[in-house]
Structure formats: C-alpha cells, structure tokens
Image 1 (cartoon, rainbow, N blue to C red):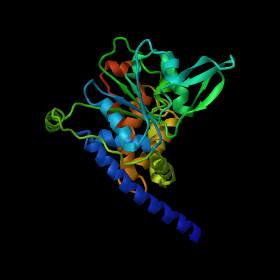
Image 2 (tube, rainbow, N blue to C red; image 1 turned 135 degrees about the vertical axis):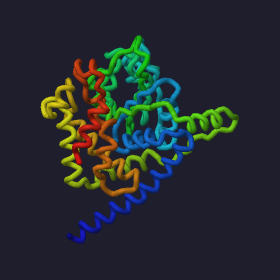
Image 3 (spheres, one colour; image 1 turned 90 degrees about the vertical axis):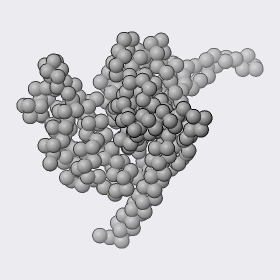
Image 4 (tube, one colour; image 1 turned 45 degrees about the vertical axis):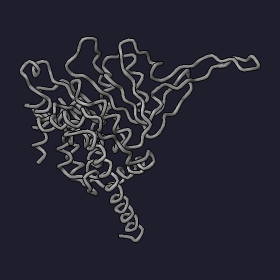
Length: 332
C-alpha cells in the first residue's frame, strides 16, 4: 500500500469518526421530539444521508408531518410543505411566469418560484393529487432541476422529497405511477406506537411545556457527510448479496416458488438505492463499511414499492414483506 493510499484512508476514517459523532447528536435531537419510532427515524435519516427521497406511509395521527418538520430543523434544511389536493396544478408546485411591466413600459415575463425550490420538500398526502400534478415532481426528484417554458432552473442543494401517504383512505386518491415510486429510495411504513410510547405521547405533548427540535447540522455539513457516504468501501460479499437479492425479486430471475407470485420486480435503480442505503446505515451506526445485516435490514423498505404481486398472489393473501423476507433468508 502506498503512502498516498494510506493517507487517503486515514482521512476517510477521520471524517467518518467526526460524522458519526455529529449524526449521533442529530439522532438524539430527533428522539427528543419523536417518541418510540427509532426504526422510522433511522430509515428516514438513512434515506437523506444516501441522498434520496422517501415515501412515508401511515394512517392519520402518527406524526408523519411532525417527523418531516423536525427532520428539517435538526438537519438545518430550508423546508417547504405542499398539501396535495385533487385541484392542485403543476404550477402550484413548480412555479409560474407572470407578466410584469417595467417603469419604461416594457413588458417581460418573470418566473416566480414555487415551493419545490426548497432543500426539504414535504409532499403531504401525495396520492390525493392527479397523475399530471404528481408527474411534475418527477424531473425535480431525478434531475434536481425543473424546466419552465424551455428555461432550466436548478433546485437548492441538497434537495430531498419526503412524501406522505394515507394507506386506508382511498376515495379521491390516485395511486402513484411505477415511474414515480421508483424515484423514492425507500418506502417507510409507520405503525401504531406501543402502549408505553403512547402513554409518553399523552403525557408529554398535552402540557404547556414540550420539547422542541434543535439544529444539529447545517446543509453544508449534511452534504459533506453525503459525499463521505459514497466514499465508504463496500465488500464483494455485500455487493454480491445486493445483486442476488434484487435479481431474485424479478419474475424472470426468481425461483419458481417466488416468481409465480410476482407481476413485476425491481430494476437496476433498486440495486443502486440499496448500495447507497447500506453505506449510510453503516455510517449512522458508527461503522466504516456495510455488512450483510445492513442489506437484510433495508431490503424491505428499498424493494417493496418496486415490486407488485400477481392477481393470484393477492387473492391468496400473499404479502410482499413475507416474500422479501424469504429472499433475505436465502442470502445466508
């Protein structure tokens, strides 16, 4: 090993140790406000550290909105919120051009930026908007810029979308198209809290004194950690596990007992998402390289919104999480 290589490795180790301490402070700041949702917090933080977007699914009243607001404060990100409704138009998200007249009576168009021009965008109840409006986010989520009247407008960096969705109220909703679902690095499901957590919520959130979020990072510090995540090494064993897992979740490559239940499966973007996510999870836990445990822990939130069951599987009561869990056990 050359001296240059050794110096580079030592620099990455030093950066990782500093980042781990910073992330610990951020994690504690989040836990002070969001009770009993450790896995949810970890998945959301992992998504942002990996540079991705998250779809947060849960019934009303489970602090989805509070989670996003707290995340913006703790990570030092400029936040905007959009309440998606059936009458929401693409221009309500992206912005629009208005005609203005100068003092010398010249007329010209000026672009007024919409709420998408934020570092952390909360798309609340995203499935309530029409497909046309939902698709307005596609370019922003993938390309980090929007195009209005042929002109390109870059979004602030970093840029993350945390969208929420209600899984039980389907009247007046529009399912997200597969192309947009694939842009979300993870689907994070929020369940009801346990009894002890719910008791704490009842006591601590109904008094005049309640905990408020405190900033632990800045946007610049977050981007530095995101760059570090991409520099963390990934061993061949983990790479092969990710490749095997993603390919085995496709009807064309799955074994007969799995493939018969699948209508379609994850594409290469799923493997890219999992590669970044396992790195981010490792760093969040203070490790310099991901392991097979990271792959197992993140397989479901990364894959399940990129897969669909066949009609027969749905009729038989087959569940995607169970299929993914079976695929994970076969990695050992």
